Image (tube, helix red, strand yellow):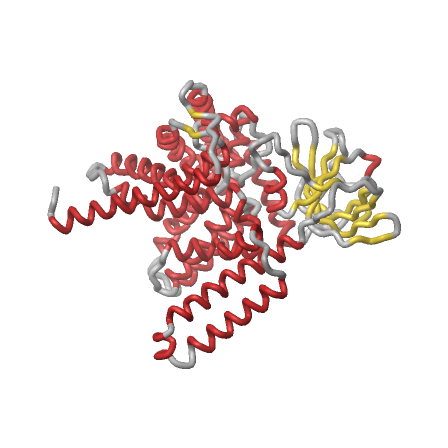
Length: 499
């Protein structure tokens, strides 16, 4: 990550120079490390430094290659014809619809220019959406514009779009484009699209209530297009927006459910291999079905490492698995390091790994029901420790009642998620599916009303907090010092048997 930051903000070297440094450090490390273990031990500081330089140079190289793809030209003024391939289904907005497409060819006059990346194309609500389906090719007769930074808002949309590889945007009417090629999606994409549409139609059929069905879709597959803006703000204001933003919590629930369902077959022959295969297939299918967001990919990689360690009978290290997930995601797209979702998801998991057990051990509870309640409180508190500075910096607000709202909302959302899975399984039995749909509706209706009531409290959140990057870094340093001091005092008391 240090190399990625240097590659973006300290561009001292060209790609050729950094490639030379990378290869030199790597081969020197191999030459000094492996021929003689005695020599390697004597100069371990040098070999460790070479390894760190190799990793850092790799980060710089990946970032520079990624930045080289970003267009540096200003907003286009010439008449251009752009050939694009639709990547994602049509999205509904309040005043328009939009698609996400990949640039295939960019032509200005008689010159074909090298343009890459993706483009967000907006259409009026009256557009015929039958041709705006994934894998179709469109010819745009109107020049797209490069996405510009908006300085009048706290949210940097340009940075967010560039991290997703979206460099251009265009506003089209029916006369501004034409369909030039219609093709069927690949087999995998076709099955995933059918499965997603089937789930959406099933939830709309059995869950009576527009907003209840919308929240149900967000909980299960991360489909948030029909959620009312006021309801979405209420979830954000009360600190439980992570419930409807598909994340590792949802995948963790499914992972635990799979282990429980497969546990009765543990004495069967080759059980470990069968369990690993089933868990990995379902986890990654669910990840692809939800759109493969960084938070869900991170969780999928972690659970894959855990399952592989279990298969090989090796002890799992959660932080190593998390680091592997971060490396895989950042190699694929280094710019995701500055994505808000990426930062919050990793900060939350690191915080839970480091602080959940110490917070849980602060209170000794014998009653099982009370223990479950305290564990819910402990995991919520743990997740907030390292995400708190990021929330202040990115959103300039802090939900003051997050502990109480999470204590209520997380168990309800877990029950609803499991009920939705049961609904999918029993969809072929209409009578049973109807009753399950009613249960989901009642639970989500109560949850939505309760969240809106909590959001209207005058002290629900502190807003308009001005927080800069130096203040964020200082707050993290203060948290680390406070935690280290707490651990030092606890160990000192244990060592000298002090109360």
